[in-house]
Length: 158
Image 1 (cartoon, rainbow, N blue to C red):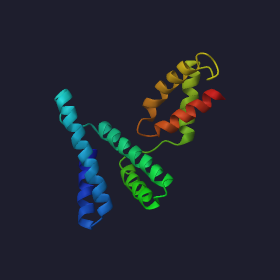
Image 2: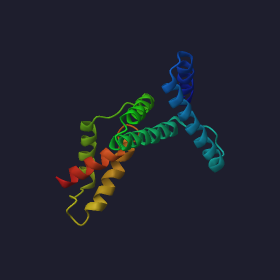
Image 3: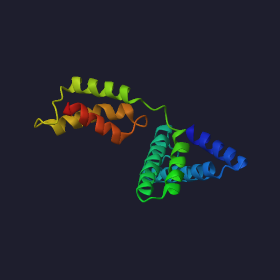
Image 4: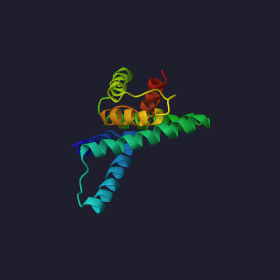
């Protein structure tokens, strides 16, 4: 399981004296544990699936990237680089990322299947929702959701 891999990597980082990796993975395990507690109270199940762990990692990566952008805008390059380093550590546990070209192919297929019109039409927003509904599950954890949204808008605007 992915959680076990993260635990082993944290132990390795601890032994190697890699404080950044150790701290990042400790934080991640804490997030996973909190999600397991939430899941236990909702469903009675204790363990997160690998897909749920990947979702948690994705959320943490997004937080790091957002924080890095805010620090960069505020002129705090050292804090921005620390957040970026943590995001890079977390990315190691994500599934292989899809290329933009592969995602564009999925978007084109979804537009063809749904017969989606452009955003200029009255059904444009509904069409965008249908296209996103088809493509998002296929790219979950493998491609940035915000970028996916931008690509769908571009495709429907063309």
